[in-house]
Image (cartoon, rainbow, N blue to C red):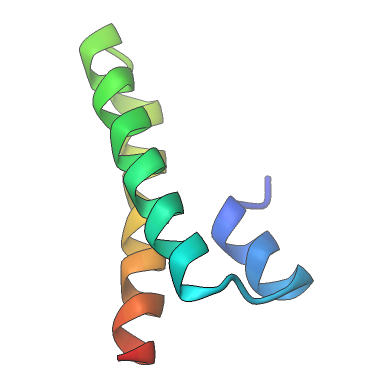
Length: 60
């Protein structure tokens, strides 16, 4: 299964603001998954957040 970060990079490049918003939203979703006890889902989401954060650091 293709992850969101890979799909976004191949389709189009997100703007800085879109990337920041995606990071916030995904962090919230990871927190929610952890609260539900879904550690695997939280880990998968957090990997995507890390990918997005890495992308953000390359832009600065």
